[in-house]
Image 1 (cartoon, rainbow, N blue to C red):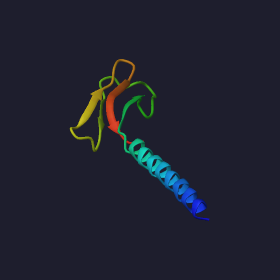
Image 2 (tube, rainbow, N blue to C red):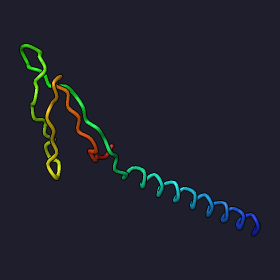
Image 3 (spheres, helix red, strand yellow):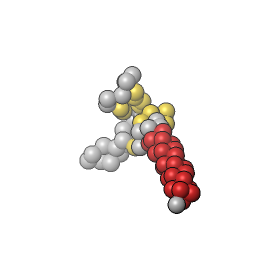
Length: 84
């Protein structure tokens, strides 16, 4: 009877450590910041023609991040940090 209790206690102890380790590693992965790239095209609402040189700003970014569109109206913001 005593050996069964010791065996059960050791098994529960190992299981508790495994669960604790899994929770810790999942928490680290969930808090990881990811670099993202935002890209798109800016066009006129009525003519659907690309807007050359339009300013695109990411509101709420610190420091303020922005870019201008190219000849085809395309823009690209790189190295934007955020959480998924």
